[in-house]
Length: 226
Ligand SMILES: CC(C)(COP(=O)(O)OP(=O)(O)OC[C@H]1O[C@@H](n2cnc3c(N)ncnc32)[C@H](O)[C@@H]1OP(=O)(O)O)[C@@H](O)C(=O)NCCC(=O)NCCS
Image (cartoon, rainbow, N blue to C red; front, side):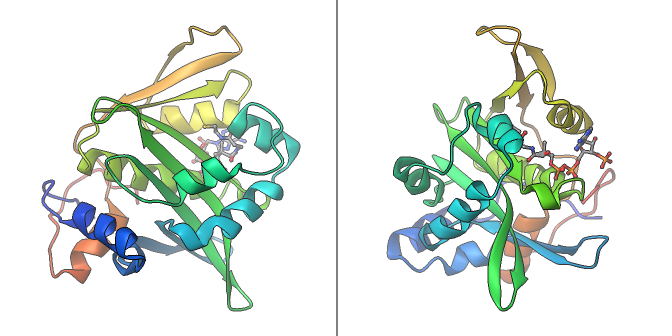
């Protein structure tokens, strides 16, 4: 069990300069790799501009229900604006994490989570989705844990999101991660979920991997679920 000790990694500058230079090698180092119970290997990593087709394919293949739960209306695909924002990782503005598997030598996105800082640093709006065939395997929970780590390390004070009241799966997931759930000003069909960010009580696996690449160590701490 490991824990990041402090907000000391220079991953934010590395990620930003890698993205600006068009060589997101540091983004590749920010990753978390593990095996599902079915033996498939999943990697969580930051998204970069080349990932637009992967993300689009994930959304196009969602069931109507999952699409509605994620976007609140039955979008068929992501708009160019959404793709542009979600593929440009800047921890002080927006970060998307992708969960990918390899099939026939190619990557396939099976889930994604993102936050958009609005405004930084007070608030980050988050969302998550996992492909229907990949749900109930722990992917969303792992995506969100890594996302919370990144948001906290980026100095964001609170992350929050809107969730449909009928979305019991998301409600359970958020409760299991100690998010607060409360009424939404737009009506009872939605609820607000939020979390004041503090040092995460779980292992920040993706950032720990980045730290390891840089020869940094992490400190042990209880409570890790990753
Ligand atoms: C909600 C969603 C993200 C969960 O993804 P997932 O990868 O299946 O979730 P996990 O496997 O990590 O589950 C984590 C926990 O969430 C809860 N959970 C997940 N799916 C559930 C379901 N169908 N019913 C009840 N609880 C569920 C459980 O507490 C679970 O823990 P457990 O496995 O120990 O029981 C996924 O169903 C999804 O993508 N839905 C469509 C999009 C969406 O609703 N996004 C949220 C809007 S922001």
